[in-house]
Amino acid sequence: MVFAFDPAPEKRIDNRFALAELELKTGRVSVIVQDADWDCSAPRYSPEGERIAFIASHQGRKHTMPGQVAVWYRDESRWEVLSEAWDHDVQAPLAWEDDGQALLLRAEQRGRQHLWRFDLPDRRAEVVVEGGTVQAFDKAAGTLVTLADSATHPARLHACLPGEAPRRIETINDALLARLQTGRVEEVWFKGAASVEGGEPDDVQMWLVYPPGFDAKKKYPLLHLIHGGPHTAFGDGWHYRWNTQVFAAQGYVVACVNYHGSSSFGTAFLDSITHRWGQLETVDVEAATDWLLKKPWADKRRVFASGGSYGGFMVAWMNGHVPAGRYAAYVCHAGCFDWTAMFADDAYTWHAKELGAWHWDDMARVHAQSPHAAAGAMATPTLVVHGALDYRVPDAQGLAYYNTLKARGVDARLLWYPDENHCVLKPRNSKQWYGEFFGWLERHDPGPAKSRKR
Image (cartoon, rainbow, N blue to C red):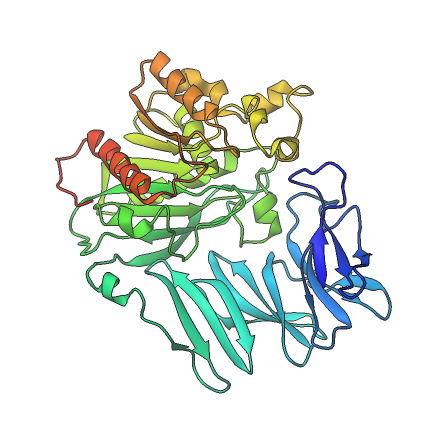
């Protein structure tokens, strides 16, 4: 059997993995791929067993490098990267086609996650199943099965026989969904920040989810959902914790901006925010707000912004860098507030890579990217949410942000979970979370009171 492992004596979150084979008969382990510059994962034997496909990321070049298709050849005891020219981040697992000439894999593209076939001789990729978001797949005896969701429905199973169109093979959630109304989902593009100083503004993607029964002749409040990561994306998927349909069903037009730094738009776009967190992303979100406010159905007084993790960092950052009054209220879930105090997290070795310096070497540079340094300008009411078991963004970040707002006389509310981590996962807590979220927005809604179902 083949597996990936961490050869370093001290285990860290950003260590680079190697590949090894275990001979089952003797128990002997042989390291077959190990390179100090490369991180290796998701190995898979070819049908004849003489090659191993795996995902390789050139971390020695930069920490934001994507995963690429690589193959190890037993007869030559060497390996090579095959997808270097394909600017996509390859996602596990890999699956060999029966003829051993191609691999099936998942990769994001412009806010969607497709299933691809990567032809090894030609080093060319083609879409086999379009997303939505393809979450999982398998192929056996010529039959391909996929598990995929979209922003309009939870995950569904489809099977595709040779020469036939995909057909759905389950109806598990149909009875539940039949009782609900969903809103229309739209993909739009607008001009955001320029990746290069002095350059032309880049095109930025935004997903809009409209309330059920949307009437363009009426006025609607706007709600930004700002994704975390930062190197992830809001995609055409059914998010089980921040569900866009649930937010839209309360009467909001929901905006999900794939700001600079987001995945699925190429490595340069993803890496563009490195060492200058908060800057390009804020330009993008603000440009999206300007775009939205030009719509006749947008209520200019009722604009809100929310985010979790890096999205929480973003709303805290915006509170100190966007003029007060632009947004009626913020919601900050598990947000980063003080990059120096964030050294208590489980990913501290990552900070200097993203921020450009350790705080003891260049405090000014770190503070220039830290929301707490602009606390003197914070004036927008904020609901702060955190879990005591959060080790990615320790709960002291939320407590410090909340206390800062209270000390400044800014309206703030703290929702703290002793039994949750970075996410709110327990059903009862999730129900409370949504109730507090919408209650906070209603409390700061300058428009007429509305009756909303929860």
